[in-house]
Length: 154
Image (cartoon, rainbow, N blue to C red; front, side):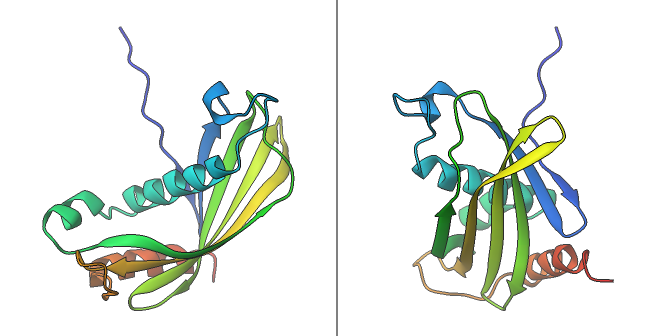
């Protein structure tokens, strides 16, 4: 028996791509994706980005080091995703600071080679202590983000 592979995104320069599919549970009765699911998809993509950058969130949480938390988000809906759509989430790091980073995420409907922009998010993610206070990101993690963000800049 061949088991399916787990969902994994890919890094391409300064962009991370993560694929999702719109399932029945993602939609309302009209077959349109419920608006909060975009936030879930964006979160999954960011979590996968951390895995791709070899940032072990779970170990940091278990060791009491801290975790990333969204501190602000601006989400713009442009077109609805519908049942059975293939959606591609694109993530970029647009600003890196000692305790936070700004991210830009796009959700595209894929139809063959065509991409149709569905939603766009601008957000700030901060690193926080177990008590929820802002804290400097671990230096290795910040360096991994810096390498990722710099890939698009010659």
